[in-house]
Image 1 (cartoon, rainbow, N blue to C red):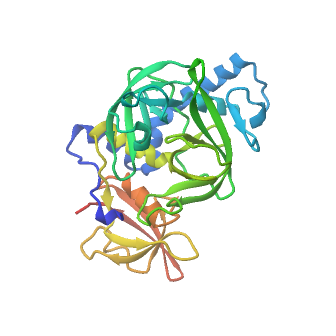
Image 2: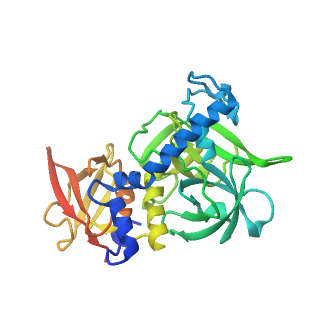
Length: 359
């Protein structure tokens, strides 16, 4: 559903929202999310270095088929040694109501916090979480977001957080990998399964999804069984997203910029609320951006934007589609001032808009 049809974010009078506002104000929502995870990302780097030391890996850049940790499927990409550290931040999730055996995966996004999807929980409010090392932890459901399907779990102990990419660095044809934690016979430690892929699309809904869905990263790779919540990793070892849907050789991932933004709100407020531009929009044919179809005369953007304008950037971040704009607004707070760049005819216009609260 479009931003104007949903309830939105951050009641500033709440103490918890004060924390969340720090993460989403001033320098943009992706930069805010980066503050929340920047410190823990360093732990992933240290973990990667320690892991390499323990496994005796060379200092060169290995390819998938030279990595001893995990199983490479259709190796085709060169990877940073830090890709091994990404494994340490991906966990296996076993819903306690479903009996033994994994159901899905999740990514450690902060101290004692794991982000995953509704599909990985099989309806359970309490799960067992198995780290890559085999360490068994209890996981309690903090909250879930019905719009994105993102769920946040609190662990009984902390694990090293993933190094995450919260920017706009992937493009069509970019080589990436997916990693899932699968149970290994005769071992408590799960077995990481790596699959190589290439990016098909960024910033648009997954194929076959409603046009009102949030933006995702769609990749194509080998047709192997997918696991809800498995991680998408770039060749620098940074987690780019968590799996939301799969069909044959295609997988669609929720980008970490959205996952972290939603997780911050779930952790501090137990729900997601977001700002409102006061427009309806669509993705223009044959190009990128979000074309405005209607502007609320009393809305936040009434004095800055008009029907026919095509929004191409928000706070300097490229807008790929109407779905991408929805995803950006979904983790921005009411009252936040954002810079908007739009094409009007042949001109580029710039404006600062203070987001309103969704009606």
